[in-house]
Amino acid sequence: MDLRNKRIIVTGGSDGIGRHICLKLAAAGTRLAILGRNVERLRTVEAECKAAGAADAIGIACDIQDPAAITAAVEAVTKAFGGLDILINNAGIWHKTGPLDTIAPDILQATVQTNLTGLMQITQAALPALRANDESIILNVVSKSGVVAQAGQSVYTATKYGVRGFTEVLKADEENTGVRVGGVYQSGTNTEMFAKAGETVPNHIFTEPDDLADVVVFVLSRPKLWIHDIRIEL
Ligand SMILES: NC(=O)c1ccc[n+]([C@@H]2O[C@H](COP(=O)([O-])OP(=O)(O)OC[C@H]3O[C@@H](n4cnc5c(N)ncnc54)[C@H](OP(=O)(O)O)[C@@H]3O)[C@@H](O)[C@H]2O)c1
Image (tube, rainbow, N blue to C red):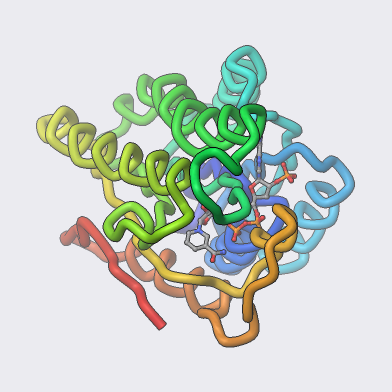
């Protein structure tokens, strides 16, 4: 897809991998809707994207755990941009690793609602606008944890296996529309995701989010071919 002026939603664009994806897509001259909860960080990324060459960049506060906020955000984007070409589902949270009984009920619920339920709900909300085009893309930033079961990650892994299943079925369901669907299955990436959950990990040895963002832009920008899945490991 020729990315210039394409209308794109990036969930979790206010930080980490999503921010880097936004910056790369900005440099490609896209029109970006950057979603997240932290308004200050959204304003910063919005300004960074404009400086990087975005045709348009708007930060929209949207808690993906809130279905009404999702509906409002998608409506605001399609109204502002006159449609939507690409949805990048990236927002996600981590829970501190440990046996299931160590994961607090509120953390369990927030992880499922953010990583899985919210992702499906925003996809549902965006689908009509995406189907209206000859060519559209839904790219889900999943995780290696959507493919490999690792000890201590029960709830996180359940959400990511769920997103992989969702991605595969959506791909089949949209086969006869112009909507192409794909998943990115990457291992540890150097962001604050673990620290936010109180986990200490050797971030510095992980994949750089800037490199991952290059891969995402490469996938989106291929003409006349579609890369269904990407597995990235250290
Ligand atoms: N880092 C890794 O090692 C790694 C590895 C594999 C897969 N992943 C996946 O990659 C994605 C991005 O992770 P990351 O490492 O970039 O994490 P991050 O640096 O913590 O960024 C997470 C982003 O998601 C947003 N977010 C979290 N909860 C949200 C909510 N309820 N509503 C709206 N936005 C929300 C955050 O924005 P606000 O705080 O502003 O809401 C932030 O922009 C996640 O899906 C994660 O599971 C990460």
